[in-house]
Amino acid sequence: MYVGRFIVVSPEVGAYRVSSRSFPNRKATTRDDTITVGPTADAPETDNPYISYNCVRLTDRGAVLGNGSHVDPIAEKLALGYPAKDALAEPLLALDFEKDDYDTPRIAGIVGLEEDPSATTDGASAFVGTVRRDALLVEEVDEPTLVATYERDSPGAFDLEATDAAGAARELYDHEFEHRVCAAGVAATEDGFETAVVNDD
Image 1 (tube, rainbow, N blue to C red):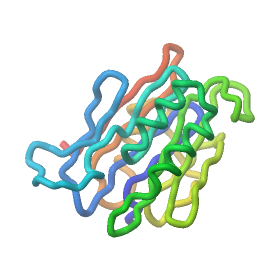
Image 2 (tube, rainbow, N blue to C red):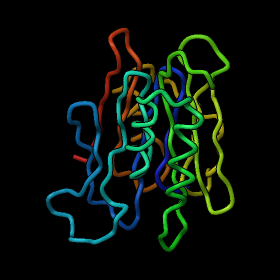
Image 3 (tube, one colour):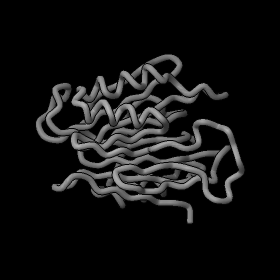
Image 4 (tube, rainbow, N blue to C red):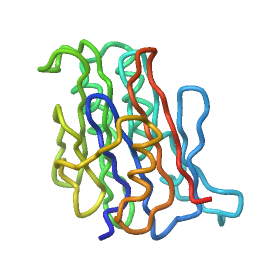
């Protein structure tokens, strides 16, 4: 099954995977508190605005994952103290679904969220959101939850076994969904967050 790009989020760990039929020549790169998806050195030139973006941004309040340019404003709003639901919903609503041939949804999640007024649980919590042509969905989740750009474009349960960033990235990269390209993982730790990437080397 081809589901396109997808994320899995839970209160303590999350991951993002690029799956692509059209632009497979990409990789995930870690720098500072960010993981960026971008073209490999041998990738053909393109003016497609959806090829390069930050897919993970770490903040003091939580880690943000997603499939496009909306990750940055979500992280900025979260860092400014916005409730998680608002930090997700406002940029998703403002940027809307991707204006490509498929009306590709934007997907995003927050992992390891601490002391948030929109959370209903004590301790770390997680939120997931998507904006499609027909809906904006944002919800709190307490178990691993997947949302993808195609086929699985509503949040749903996912059997994620990994408990650390490297394991989560590897588990999503190795998943049976078709046309894998690269993956990124993030996990909450006592000192903040750890991240990991898996590329098609």
